[in-house]
Structure formats: structure tokens, C-alpha cells
Picture 1 (cartoon, one colour):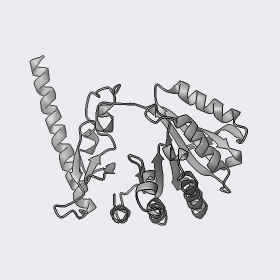
Picture 2 (cartoon, helix red, strand yellow):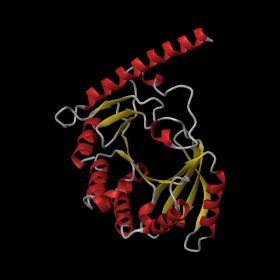
Picture 3 (cartoon, rainbow, N blue to C red):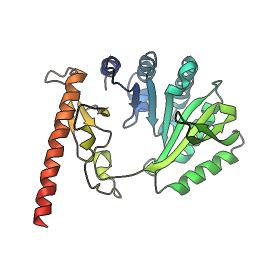
Picture 4 (cartoon, rainbow, N blue to C red):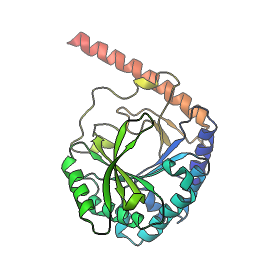
Length: 277
């Protein structure tokens, strides 16, 4: 997506009192911009978001570790963490650990090793996998403990509601790592073409039957999808007929309207199926 479009919607969202103050940069692989686009694309977007005290989560598969882009990307990550040290809890890097990303385990350990060398007080990392990958995550944690370049401690932090959160503290807090394996594949959204994706019973739209909180996922094709992976695609267009960005309030209105329509349609389908049974 063009840098100015992302900045435009960041600014529009920031003016909405209901905005959760949280933005995720995902893909595809956003770090491909370092090879195929301007080198300052990602840093410029990161800076624009964090200058406004908005939480930022960057999702990456880490494939760039094995390229000559590694040094610059790591430098940009650490520079950002140092500059926004007072807001460090707002900046998180999410690394994928699933079987759809070759060499993910080795790549992620290398990223952690590089970030742990930095002079930051802490960089927040999140490593995620699917719920059938407990063995992979256990292997990952074991390799971390065996790495002679890393000092690894398994501790717990308290969440805002005082619930304990298991974390892995690397090199006295240079990197704070949280892991999770509760993601599930389903036959919808980006997971539709994965061989072991299971069809979910109901599409994920009923929570948006009023103008409440919406997770909006913008893509490069000009669509905004309700949720990152809604089981039945509910979307609106962020581009108008001239190719310009539409106002965020209009996109929000269209998503709610489309969700209401889908909910009614699902009720009719369920009623028909019940009658046939």
C-alpha cells in the first residue's frame, strides 16, 4: 500500500474517539519493501504511527534474515525501540513460527540473537504458531536455552488485570519474548487454500451487527475486510472509483451494513436447513 495511504488512515483513525490506538503492519511480508520498494518505507510508517503514541505490532516471517537486508532491518528495529523507549510497551515485533514459513525456527533465533545485542532496555517480541505445534515451540525454547550467546530466563509478568503472563527474558531484558500456540486454521480468509484448514461453523460477523468496535484489515487490492480472517468475506472498498482513499467513517458504515446483511442471510440459511432436516 502507498505510504501516504497508510498515513492517511492512521490520522483518520486517530481522530476517532473509539479508536483502540493499535495498528498492525502485516502481509504478505512487509519487509519485502526493503528489496522491492523504498528503503525508508517501513521506518517512515513506523515513525508516523509511533509519533502519535499509537501501539504498533509488526508481523514478519523473518525470511529476510538469510539476505543482505538483515543488518538494515535490525538497525531500523533497534533505532525505533531506542527512540521510543518511553513507549516501549507500544512497540511489538511478531514472528511467525508455523510450518508455512521454512526455516522459521532458525530465522527467529537469529533475529532474537541480533536484537539481544542491541543497547535497548527491552524490545517486545511475540512468537506465534498453531495449536498443533507444541513440539515445535518446545524445541524452540530448548534451542534458546542452549544458545551460548544468550542469557535466557523464564519468568512471569503481570497483565493490566493482574493475571500472570509467562515470558522469556533474554540478556537481562534486552528482549522480552512471549510465545503462544493457540492460533487455529479455518477454511476462510487467507486460510482458505491451506490443506488442513477446517471449515468453521459460522462466519465471524455477528459481533458487528451494530456500529461497535471493528477490526479493519486494509489490503493492497483496495479492500477493507471485517476482521483479519473473517470466515465469510465481509468487506468494503477503501479506494473510490478514481482510485483515491475513501473517508474512514464511510468504510466503517459499509462494513457494519454488510455485516448486518450477512447476519440476516445466515439466519435465513439456518432456518431453511432446519426446515429441510
